[in-house]
Each structure stands twice: as C-alpha cells, then as structure tokens.
Image 1 (cartoon, rainbow, N blue to C red):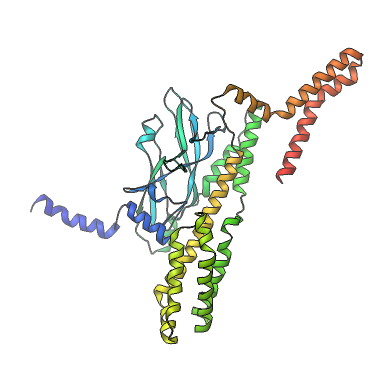
Image 2 (image 1 turned 45 degrees about the horizontal axis):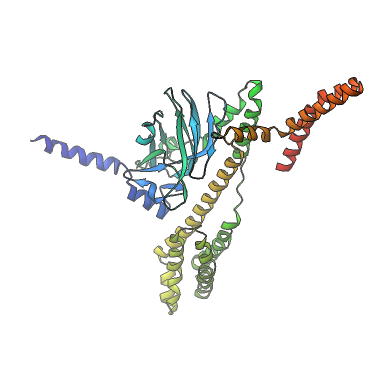
Length: 414
C-alpha cells in the first residue's frame, strides 16, 4: 500500500469529525447576507479576502506606559497616531462581532503593519462572543511608528484602514449541554473588565487630568444606552409591519389580513426606502427581501395565496428581514459609540507649533484667564498698597474659577 493510499482514510476521518476548517471570504460574505454564524458590523465586502476578514481600529487607544489616551492626529486625507519606541497600547476595534456556538476564530497581524515594526498580534475569538474587541499593540523598535487608522480612498471617501486579519472556522456542535456550556464566553463586550482595572489604578498628580478624561470615557462607554438615531427610525415601523404579518399568517391565517399588511409593506418600500437609499443607510438586500414578500400579492386565488405565504421559505424571508433590521440597529449603535469616542479622545497638533500652543491655551482657558486677572490684582495691590485682601483673592482665584468651570461643564453634559 502506498503512502498516499494510507493517508486517504485519515483525511476522510478528519473531514467527518471536524467538517470544514476555515471560512473563506465567499462564506464570510454569505454569513453577512444570511446574518448567521459570523456577524460583523459594520461590514465592508472589500475587507473579506482569502480566508479572512480585515478588521480596523477605533480612535480609543490607551497607552499603558504613559497611562493616558493616545492623542489622535486628524488630517484631511487620513487619521493616525504615533506609537512611540517601546510603547504598548490597548486599542478598541472599529467593528463589533457576534458569533454563534459553532463559530470560532483567531486574529493575526497583517504583513503591512509588522513591516513597519509593530509587534505581532495574536489572540482568539470564542463562540458566543458579541461586542467590540480589545487588541494590544507594541513598538519594540527605537523609532516612532505612524499608525494610520483611516484614510481617504480614490473616490474621496474616508474608510477605516485594515489592521488585523480575522480567520474564522466552524467548530463541531456539541449536543451535550454540559460540554457546550464550556464553549460559552464570560468575558464582557469591549473587555470592560480590563478598562475598569486601568481606571482603578492610581496615577501621578501631574497626570491626574488625563486620567480623569480616560475614566470619563470608559464610564460613558460602559454605561452606554442605545437610542436609535433619526436616520434609523424607519426600523420601528417596518418591525411592526413584520410582526403584524406574522400574526396574520401564523395566528388566524386570514387571507384578508395578510394581504392588507403586505399592501402596507409594499407602500412602505416604495415611499420610504428610496429616500433611505439616497442616504446610503441600508443595503440593497433589505429592498430585495421586501420585494420577495410583496410578490405573493400577485396570487389571486385564496388557497394558492395562503399556501404561498404559509410556505417555510416565505417564513424564512420574514425572519431574514427581521434579522436585517436588528443588524442595521447594531450598526447604528456602533456608529454612535464611535462618535462618543471621537468627541472625548484628545486631538494631537503634531505639525504646527503655533497650533499646539493654541490647543494648550484652549484646554486651559480658565486657568489662563485666572492668571491674567491675578496679574491685574497684583498690579493694583502694588499701586494702592492694599496687599492683604487682594493677595488672598489672587491666591484662591485660579482654584475657584477652575472648580466653577468643572461644575458648569458637568451640568452641561448632563
């Protein structure tokens, strides 16, 4: 018996026990279309390549060595930050990921990133995970590295830059409940437990303000409560229509009720969705699903109509449309969280020294004004020899104004 013949039974056995190993880009795109197995929000078809999907980073980047949020440089063509020599940072992913109990994966560094000198990235994606991810980057070199977070493409659209490759695969489904529970992950989304540990650590006095800003951002993201934005309000109406359609089909199976709801769905698609699509908010797949639902209206015979809408495939289209709505809500939630991050992370002024000075003065405008007033008081004290009271006022004025400014800022945010 030859070597090749002896290997064949082993290959068949492995295939039978473990099934398919890796998900190819084609199957990752299929997961997006069917919204099952592996869900990535937001999804960019161009990032699915080979046997993986390229993920990006958000602007929430924390320097472990410097114990502060890393300043982000925002330019017309790109957004980036600098990874300094021997520095380690924690970065939150741009995408949110959800996996079912039969999907797992691992994350790997892209060659383009490691070629710049950034240390290798390697961690796992467990079944039943949901939420954003936390990655660690380090710079083992002696030079500072520019890491691009997003850049403007040839069409003039700013897109997140691919940084990490996700390789996903299917794991065998264990029907025994005791064993399947071992695959369930207890780590919270965004690894908020790690963020909480970092916020609880003490810092030096002169870094206290930066630490407070970091703690505030972590607190806001951890306590984030999602409220759909105006551009996604249409999901409420469409969800209600789908619920009514289900009741009409699965409840009393009344042809008249089912047709009435489908007519309203068709009107919703014609009147509402064209406006939405002009804003590039939802994918074309949603319109296609609603078209499939409305096709049954062409059937006039009662028996044929009810056979069509009670069909298993028809119910699957309704379920897919409902999942698409939930997916759009998830994308809106992720977008809102990124806006909150962008609002609170510090911005770097790396090119113009004058702009850098202006930024420092803007961040410390209260103390700057208090200093000017204190100088004026000191001049008055020197001219009129009423030094005692004026000296006291001069001494406490910066502190009082700073406290008042903090209280006012908190009230405005609330």
